[in-house]
Amino acid sequence: MALEACDFRTLENLCPGRVGAPGSPLYEAGRRVFSRAGRIRSPAAVLRPADRNQVAAIMAWANAAGIRLSIRSGGHSFDGFPVRDDGVLLDLRGLSAVRYAPSGYLHAMTGATVGDIARALDGTGRAMPIGECPTVGVGGLVLGGGFGQCTRHFGLTSDFLAEATVVTASGQIHVTNAVTNANLFWGLRGGAGCVGIVTDLVFHTVPIQQVTGVTLGWRWDAAVEAILLFTQLMHTAPSELDLQLSIRTTGADRYADEASAGPADVIPGTPRVRIDGQFLGNQDDARSLMRPLLEHPAALHASIREESFFDAVFVSNDFLHDPAPATLRPHRIASDIGRGALGAVEAAAIVGQINELQFAPELPGGAVSIEAINGAVAAFTPQETAFFHRGQDFVYHWALGDRLPADAGLAARHDALLQEIRHDLAGVLTGGRYVNYADILDTPNDWWGDNTDQLMSVVQEHDPDRILISRLNP
Image 1 (tube, rainbow, N blue to C red):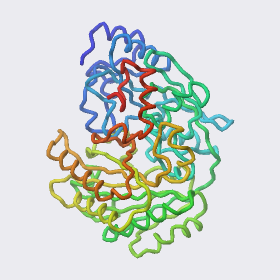
Image 2 (cartoon, helix red, strand yellow):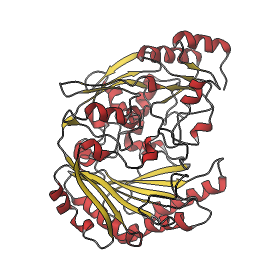
Image 3 (cartoon, one colour):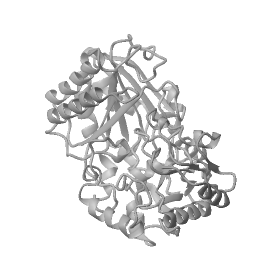
Image 4 (cartoon, rainbow, N blue to C red):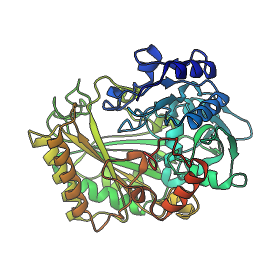
């Protein structure tokens, strides 16, 4: 779609100096997102509002004009969803203020990043569950639910949301919490931004001490045993221990970073097996809990160290600290929610898929990560917030190396790989999927389960004309 000259004049009056026409620096910066596929799409314009009042004015204009809006904050959506050819893109990175209050609440605007949150809290003795990549926008993270290290003990990022300010399609500004505008607040906690544009967030925080950070390598030829031991441990260990297992292909044409064949600690062309995480306690207790992993003969180069909470949180891959890495290999991302520890058959199926991604010459690599989501996530029932996947154990995160321009044959092969692994893991999968890892094969019911109809009802009440582009109204 294209805007008329009069539209640009109107927008310039609403957001002076913050309107990006195609080809302008502001426009190009707005569509420079994490996803390589998203960077080549062309919205009609990019707007970077300076405050919530400008957001409200833009929403009211769009509603009156019948023009659809999409929203980005950190821009880390794996499929580049907000950058569209059929609407106007709001870049909310100008709303990035963060402030910690002595009362224990953290005030953040939606364009702040996970790194901004960490810097505001580091040294205060307080923390909250956040993701592992510092350039992720807090708005997108919390609205989808929000997994990260310490999720097992503290819960989701969205579980720490105490209050939010949201602009609905009419241009109205609403303060929401568990009492005021409670239906909107319900939809914000896991509803993936479908109900409106969030501008301001207020979070609870909790006391935190030094933690023990964990990094453990593992031999590829014993990857099945790594998966079995890991899922058994995370199924039964106290919630203070929160680990993630990842297996990623390496090699010059297989690694996530096109400029690298893989980390120095692996032989390029051999999948890398790694366990990362943290323990809310001391080294000795961490080692005791992790003994089945640490004492296995396939364990390599373990690092168990006491450090600050935020030092332990962030991933060590430097190129992921760039909000739009130039050499990031295009990837298709998908997910599944699982219940219970894996058996040998399921573990072997995962290893078989990685083996195929590593060694089939026509496939450009990929990865799987397994995150534990049991423990405190179940403190709420599935109906208490829009986030439905309570009382489960794991989220499986599938990454399939992709190509640009899109390759229909490769897409079909990826579809088949996902169908195969879901068939092989059918005994432990719930059928649910995580909206922040959305894939083209997913449906709203996969993301929100029995909450889908209620979420749709809230959206229809506040956006009957579908002005806001969202996962529910694409």
